[in-house]
Image (tube, rainbow over all chains, first blue to last red; front, top):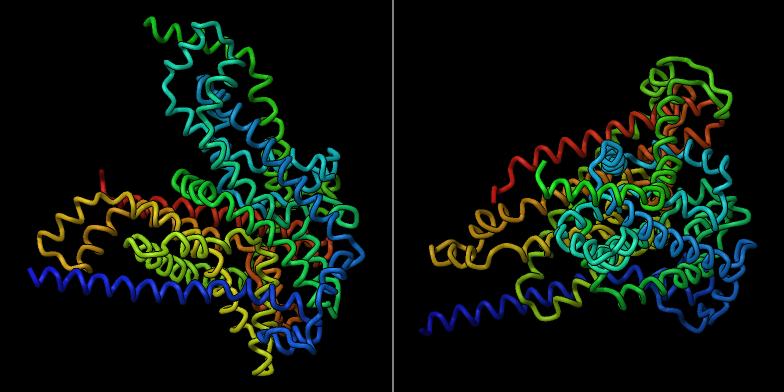
Length: 287
Length: 300
C-alpha cells in the first residue's frame, strides 16, 4: 500500500519536472517573437548592435518605426495588407465553394471523366510548384489573371487537388440514403447539395478552409510571379522586396512591419485555435 | 439490373444534367492552374526558349546541361542533407513533445498552443526574423550567417525545426490519443517498463502518424524555398575554376528559380529541365517512402 503511494508520489514529481522543462522550452520558443516586438521599438542602429537588449532611453524609438513602416519602400503597407486579405479570403471562398461542389459530383457520378479528374487531383498534390511556376505565370498573364481580383482563379486551379481529395473522402462517408430521401421528397440536385450535403460537410469545410487560408496567406512565389509587383504586393512580397532591394534596410521599421503583419495572424490563431489544430490534424491524416 | 442500381443511375443522370455548374468551374481552373502548365512545362523542357511562343525543339540537350551543372548537383546534395537532418530532428523532437503533452500535464493546452504558433508565420517573414536573430548572435564573433555556409546550414535547420515541430506535434498527439488505453494498461499489468511500453506498444500503434510525418517533413525539406530565399538566399557563393559560381547554401527549388529568373533568359530551357527532374525526385521520394513505411504499420 505504501509502495503504491510512493509510486504515485514519484509519478507526480516526474510530471512536475516535465511541466517545468516544457515551460522553459516554451519560453525559448517564444523568444524570436519577443525579439521582433522588442526591436520594433528600437532605433535602427541599435537593432543591429544590441539585438537582444531591451530598449533603453537612448535606443527607444517610440512609435516612429511604425510610422516609417507604413510607407516604407515607397509602397503603403495598408495596400499590401489589403491585397493580402483580399486574395486570401477570395481564394479560400472560391476553393471551398467550387471544390465541395465538384467533389460531391465526383463522388456521386460514376463516369470515366470523374475518375480522371480525381486521379489528376491526387497527382497534382505531389507536383512541386517549381515544376509549373514558369508556364503557370505565363498562362496567367495570357489570360489576364494577373490582378488581385482574378488571381483566386489561379489559386483555385493549383489548390484544387488537396481540397477535392479531402472533400471526396468525406462525401463518400455520407450514406446515400439521406440524399435519396431528399430526392424522394422532391429535392433536385441543387437543393440536395446546398440544403442536405453542404451542412453535413461543415467540419471538412472548416478544415480545408484553414489549410487553404494558411497556404494562401503565407504564399510568396505564386503571387510574386503572377502579379505586377510595382502595382500589387502582398505582405510576404512587400517584406521580401524591402530586404532584397535596399542595401541598408531600416531594420527597426522592418521589424515594426513584421510585427504588424504577424499580430493579426496570432490573434486569429488564438481565437480559432481549436479549429485550426483540428483542421491540421484532419488534413494530415487524409493527405 | 437490380432495383437499387437502377435507382442510382436515374439519380446520377439527374445530377449529370448539372455538370456545368458543379464540375466545370473547377475543371477549367484546374486546367489553367495545373494541367496545361504541367504539360507545357514537360514540353518546354525539351526546347530552347526565351518566350513560350518561340520555342525550338532541342531534344535531351537541356537535361544533359542540367545534369552537368555543378551548381545543380551541389544544390541536390545540400537539399538532401538539409531534408534528412531536419527530418530526423523535427520528428524526434515533435514526437517527444507530443508524448510529454499526452501525459495529462498541467498546462498542456498552453504548451500546445505555443508550440504550434510559428507555423502560422510565413516562410519569408520567418527567414527575416531569424536572420535578425542570427546576426545579433553572430556579430559577437564578428561573422555572419551570409559568410559561412556551415552556419547557414545549421541556421536553416534551426529555423525549420522551430517552424515545423509544432505541426508534426499536432499529428503525433492525434495519433497518441488514438492508442487504446486498455492496451497500455495491459502492458503495465504484464510488467512492461515505461520504455518497453513506448517501443513495443505505443510506437507500433502510432506508425500511421509516423508515416505521415516523415513523408511530410521529407517533402517539406525538399520543396523548401521561401525560408531558404529569405534567410541566406544561397550565400556565400564560391567561384569555380571554370568561372561558374556555386551558391553554397542554395537548395534545389532556389537553384531552379535562379536558373529561370536570374541567370538571364538563355537558360530557361535548362531551368525547366531541372524543374522536371525536381518533380520526378519529389514525387518519387514521396511515393517510395509511403510504400516503405506502410509495410511496417500495424495491421488493424
